[in-house]
Each structure stands twice: as structure tokens, then as C-alpha cells.
Length: 298
Image (cartoon, rainbow, N blue to C red; front, side, top):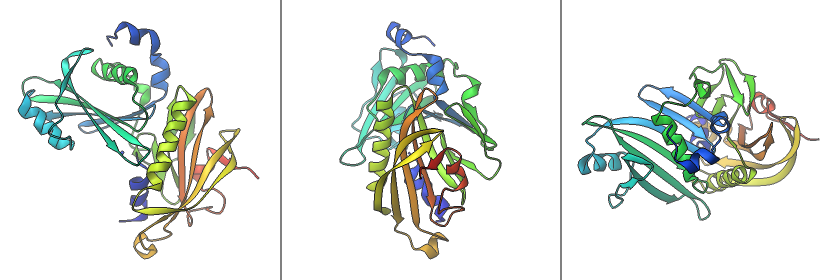
């Protein structure tokens, strides 16, 4: 395992509306917070703290097929699919997992028949408190194919849309997931965009707690510091994190510097986790990727 394979293990967190939804969901605002990547057979999204995938499986829409889906996604056999009044043809499976003493992860799987021998699965995962209104809105948007093309990125990275600002990065960087970009030896960051600061803070706190409790490493030091983030003063939690893999195997430093930020950016509320190894380019200040969005306040 190389050290650039280790970071994702630590940091990756991989319409016909009812009346209530139509009144309270601003589709344009939600889609502006969404990032999508299409790969062969599967489409991935990140929207407001939800990691979402869409994938079709060869399976019958009956108990036998449901058991196949449950096995595929490690869902307890005792969990039964239930009807959802919003989607008359669909079924829903829900499981929860305690990631830490403080963080509960929710996984929601919507199942829809595709002909007689295929099931479309729309899976949603979050460590925030569930927003069922947002879930149903996004599932309906997927089914109706109403998600705008502007949310999608090519796997070949040239630039990224960071909270409404396009940043040119060039070919040195690659997507580790939706809203998760890595530039080897130059830094990595993942982020989510929200309509409320409370949701942003909830997510960044969960990310810190999950990373801090991973068996693969330990937090050596943590401090709250002042930074300039996208041109505005705010605070970040800065941690020094040691990965329990020898440097010889890592191929370099096994110490990560990680910054956790939740703040307002251009009318959005952003959660961002930025990291770099202590031997990355310009590591004594900020590596190039991190320097694109933040500055250390002297």
C-alpha cells in the first residue's frame, strides 16, 4: 500500500414531487451543491453530506432478488424492504452503523424494478442526521433524469468547481471520489456544500471523530488556528496524524497534517477537510492544492 492509497482510506467518506417537497426544496440551490461522476455502470454523487450511487443489478424484484441485494451491500438479512408512499413501484432498505461512540452512519437503499430481471439501486449514505425530504427529492431527480449536466465532472481533471469558483489544477490531480480531489505530493481535500451552517458543522465534526478513531493511526496533536479561507477569515482545527505504517513501506512520511473547516463561502456553507504529508511540496507552509483555497494567518 502506497501512502497515496492510504489517504483515501482515511479521508474518503467513498420530478414528480409531493406538495411538501415542491414547496420547500429549491432544486437549483441543491443542484449547485451537487457533484456527480459517471463511470461505466455506476454514477456517483455527493450532495449536502450524502454520498450517493446509482447501479443496476441482475436480480428479480422479489424476495430472492432482495436477498441478493442485501448480500451485495452487507445488509442484515433481518432487515426487510418496505414500501415508500412517495415511490409506488419502489422498496426501501435502511441500515445504521455506529462509526464511533458519537457518530451514526445511515445507509438508505431505494430499489426499483427494471423489467423482469433487473433492479436499479439508488444508495444514499450520510453521517449527518437524515434529511428525508432531500433524499426523496434527489431520488426523484435521478428517476426523472432531471439532474443538470453541469453537476458532472470528467474523470480526467483539468479544473474543479469549488463552491462556485472554478480552480484550474491541470493533469497532476485526480478524483478520489465526488468532491474529493488528490494531487500526489501536492495535497488532498474533500468537501461538501450545504444550505445551512449547522449541517456543515455537523459533518466536519463527524469527519474529525471518525478519523481520530481509526485504528490505522492516531492524533498526535490538535490546535484551533486562524486561517484565511477563500478570502475570508475563519478558524480551522489543525491536527497532526500519524499513520501506523512504517515510512519505508509508505515510501515517505507517515505523518499527515489535516485541517478541518466549516464556514460560509459565497453564500454557501462549506465543510472542507484538507490534508498533506509532512514531506509534500511546500509542506512547511501549505502545499499547492491547499494554497489554492486557504492561507495560514500570521
